[in-house]
Structure formats: C-alpha cells, structure tokens
Amino acid sequence: MTTTPATRPTPLAADLAAELDQLRRDRVYKRLNYLDSPQSARVQMEGRGEVLILSSNNYLGLCDEPSVVEAGIDGLRRYGAGTASVRFICGTFAIHRTLEAALARFVGTEASLTFLSAWNANEALTPTVLREGDFVASDALNHASIIDSIRLAKAITKCTTAVYKHGDLDDLVAKLESARGARRKIIWTDGVFSMEGSIAKLPEILEIARRFGAVVALDDSHATGVLGATGRGTAEHHGVLGEVDIITSTLGKALGGASGGFVAGPAVVCDMLTQRSRPQLFSNALPPTVAASALAAVEYVQQHPERVRRLQDNARYFREQITEAGFSPLPGETPIVPIIVGETATAIRMSELLLDEGIFVTGFGYPVVPQGVARVRCQLSAAHTRDDIDRAVDAFKRVGRQVGLR
Ligand SMILES: *Cc1c(COP(=O)(O)O)cnc(C)c1O
Image (cartoon, rainbow, N blue to C red; front, top):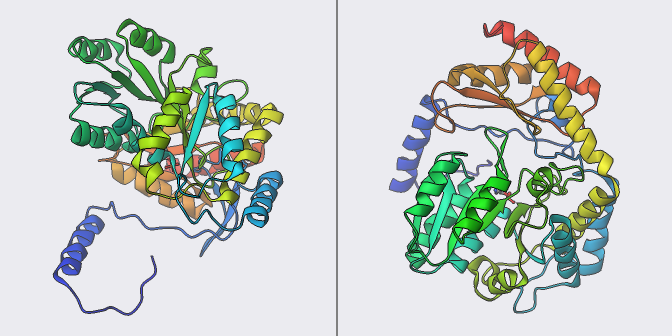
C-alpha cells in the first residue's frame, strides 16, 4: 500500500482505522512483501535480498519461461495494450478464440470461454445457469469464489443450496436426496483443495451426479497443469478425462501465472455465458498480452510433459525429506504440502523465522483453518532444484528446533 498526505478525516476512515488496529492486535493483519524480479524458484524481495519461494502457484515455473514472455510481447506488439471494450461490442480478438480452442482441447471439453480471472469465471457460471427451483450442492472446503458465486445465484435466482461435509459423499447423497424435486442440479467441487492439498473423489462424484441427474462443476485451478501424467488436471489424474460436465480454472497459477480464468464445457454453456453472464457482458476481456502468454503456456505444457513430471517428482521428494526431518505433512499426492504445527502463533512464528532463513512460505491459522491445526503451507514448483528443496528442508529443521517442534 502506498499513501499520500492525508485528506480531511471522515467518520468512515476513523472506523476503518479502528478495525485495522483490531486486526493488528489479533495478529491477522497482512503485510505485503514486495518482489523485484519475476516469480521463480528464487526471487529478489525488497529489504531481504534473494529468497527461495515455497508458497507460489507458479507450479510449472512458466511465469518467466522465455517462450511465454516472448508470446506476451508479440501479443502486445500485434494487438496493442488492451481491448478497450467488452467482448460483445468490439473487444474480442482472434487470439481469444485461439486460446479458448486450445484450453478446451487441453482440459477435454467441447468449448471454453475466458474471463479476467477464475474468480469471474466462477461468479459468472452459477447465477447464469440456475433458475428458481434449481439446486446446488457445494463441498464445505470449496474456494471462496465458488461460495460467493452460489450466494449470488441464490440471491438472483432463488435457487436452493446445500453444503456437504468436505469429501463426504454420503452427505452429498443425503443433500441430493433432499432436493429430489429440483430441476437443474449442480454439484460444485474444487479439484484440488488449496488448504489441504487433497484431491476431489471425482469418479464417485460423477457417478452420484449421473444417478441424480445432476451436473458436475469442477474448479481445477490448483490442478490444471499439475495433476495427471500430462497436466490436464483432476480428470486425467482419475482417468475420467472428457467425462466432466463443466470445468473452470485459472490462467494465474500453472499456466503462466499472469491472470485470467475460463469456463470449459459444452458449447451451449459457453454460448449462454457469452449471452448472459454479467462479468462477460459488463467487463473487458483478457488483455491480448495475457491471452498470448497463456496460449504459449498451454502449448508449452503440451510439448513438455516432462515439466509436469518434474513438478510431481519435486513434490514427492519434498514430502519424503520433510517427513524424514520429523515433520508431519498432511498426506497426499499434490504439490501442496501443508505442515501442521498446531497453534496459529506457531505457524506465524515459523513463517517469520523461515523468512529470516531466506525461505518464503506462508503460515495459515484460525480462522482460515480450524483452531489447533494451524499450518505452514508449502507449495512445490517444477522450477525448484533438488538443491533448493534440500536448503528448504534444512531451514525447516533449524526453525522447527527454535519453535520447539522437533
Ligand atoms: C486461485 C483460485 C481461484 C481464483 O483464481 P483467479 O484466476 O486468481 O481469480 C479460483 N478457484 C480456486 C479453486 C483457486 O485456487
């Protein structure tokens, strides 16, 4: 945050200042760290120098991949800075169509439609496809953007909603039983749950959906480029590629890390979103630079499946080493490796001490996760070398001793 000389204080400003003070007292106030280099395994952090990042979504290391950067520059030269309009007026470029076709092919659907963010994509989807008398069931640990999209759908359409316990398919079935009269039904789930690093039980969810005449909407933001032998996501991981009704995902994580998101699914779904979804109708399209970089990222993943393997190998190696060092990561197969440390204060203290050691990793405590299971969440990248990982594990050993964890 930058500040300029204060203007006349208002009652609102005084109120907010008091609320911010409370956040500081509760030790949940977020301080931003400024980086002065591309996202990579190691970055330049203002006031710190070089630090190793263990908390980025740059899963494949494509943020600074030369072909991805060059494609963005070419996009800028060819199309200029931006679209200067919403898509249906005059803001759609050829690169949008090429990118959307490539994304649909990659995740195994008929069509796709891009948005400025996955947040926007999710927000667009639920209110656009549901009507009064319809029903949506949502996993308790779904991403905030899914939760908000369902709230919006409920407010706009008066559809009914239910939250099922995380990964609890009996509870999902019970919720669907209670909504037998509903017309359209959606089961909304993350592919990979970001705080746990757990993977949705997709084949079972698809089977339940078919039994109840429901549609599965899968948010694969932490899975696209990450799961499956060739990075095509949760469906590839589970061997059900091409069977998921609707997939949403981000371009802001593995696929170049700039920004942007998409809804992929039947062409009629994408067409209806083009016709009716408010983030599409009233907000500009992806800047052509970003679309061009994202397209180059998709092409890169398709030509270099070994990058996906390296990510998966790094995750496996880190899990082994950190367990051997005496920590207890949540078990799993994703590059999200949460290390449970107990109290919120311990998680915060650990991330501070790790930063002193040159390792940038975030601690999460209550209320983001329940009391008593505060965690330091590590995320691996294909950009990490074995050396980077060994250095991180050594730092964890020293810091673990300092906070009395080992
Ligand atoms: C990161 C994330 C998003 C938001 O992605 P943006 O493109 O940055 O808006 C949405 N859903 C899930 C599951 C995510 O992890």
